[in-house]
Length: 215
Image 1 (tube, rainbow, N blue to C red):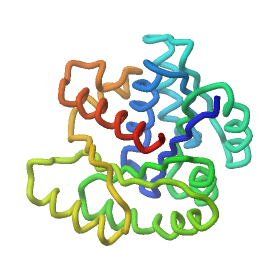
Image 2: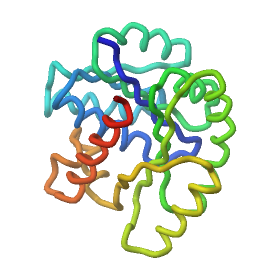
Image 3: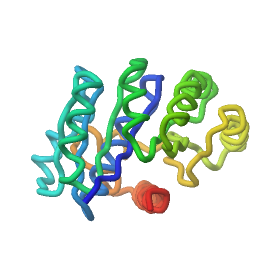
Image 4: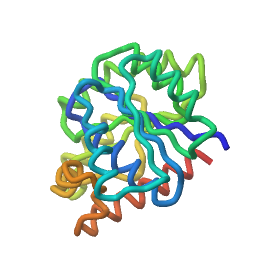
């Protein structure tokens, strides 16, 4: 068994990395063995969620850990490779060494971006780092639109223009602007485990799309 590694990278804080990481960990642990490593310490949003998760939804298929620096992250990933099916890496904002490490370790990196011009501008700082990593190792990178209002023309136009400007392909799945994501994070749950059918549909779609990419 060789773990598939999914990294969450974004230089801008508050873009939704931990929200995506925790929902992926919770959803995938229903069907596979999953490890979630939070390297955004000492903030530790994913680590706090994981501690709650083990209280409200304990599972032998889910383990969590933290990494204080990129060397520790690499060592812990190496330890876990043959023990789980998926490793999810939640990286910190604006720490270049850790972001590079996640890009080099991952089979797939997701770049969460809120549908606003400010977040797109911030994401442009990440593109050079991604291009450098891809010269050394094949890693799939996809934008993931979060807090996305699919029904608005502005969001659609911004998404189309941004994908061209950033030269990054976006996932077909988008995550909407839903209270369920914030509520789930504070309860150790996934948004699919709350009473929001739209959030559940988004997360199921996200998991299916990720699995297709990682085949």
